[in-house]
Amino acid sequence: MKKFTYIFSLIFITTLLFITFNPTVVQSQDTDVTVEDLRNLVRNNIVPNARATQTIGSPYFFENYREGYVTLFDGNVTEPLMMNYNVYENQIEFVDGSNILAINAERMGGFTFTSNENELEFKKGFKADGLDANEFVQVLSDGPVTALLKHDISFLENVPTYGSATQVDEYTTDEQLYIHKEEEGKTERIRRVRERNILRAIDSHQDQMEQYVEENRLDLRSYNDIKRFFDYYNSLSQ
Image (cartoon, rainbow, N blue to C red):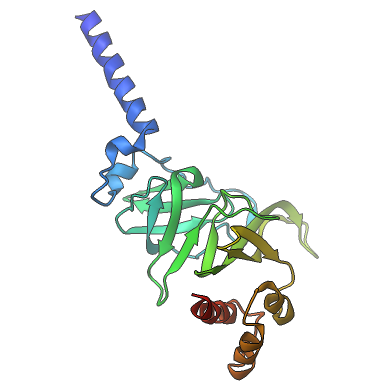
């Protein structure tokens, strides 16, 4: 009897490990991936412990969880999730009952927030100066020239505050603009986000685009206007 129990336990553990490290076993190519499926793929209960020190800022893209979905590395799409992008950890965290589960970058191909008027799409696979292929970037405009916005969050521990003996932890944010040229298969960084540098980065329609900027009073230091710029440019280039 003990031998039978041992063999059964060994088979159960082996099967569980196989499913965990081979996620396609629990996913159907024809249906969405459910939260129940995701539980076999992600880390559980990742809410950080409370710290004694004060913290300024946040590692997250949004203040609160928003509705969206995740595209897994094999192309399967999850059901709608209440989720947030942990920029500092480069992972999606979503609500599952009383738990918060995390999906790291290696298991995702991309993700999309759907709760805003305009969907916010994030992808990876672009490589350039200051950008690793495993880091997610926001897609501002998609086409022959794809405009990409990288969100960076750094963590500074025990930062002294002016006029106080209290030390705090601080998250600091930064953003970097990239463009990916489909024909060349090349991604490059726009180091100084201003009109002249963006106009120089495109290969055609410079005069027409300069006129479009002037007529529509675009401020190419604004990412909303940069999106409009490249949406129009891609419509001319397709």
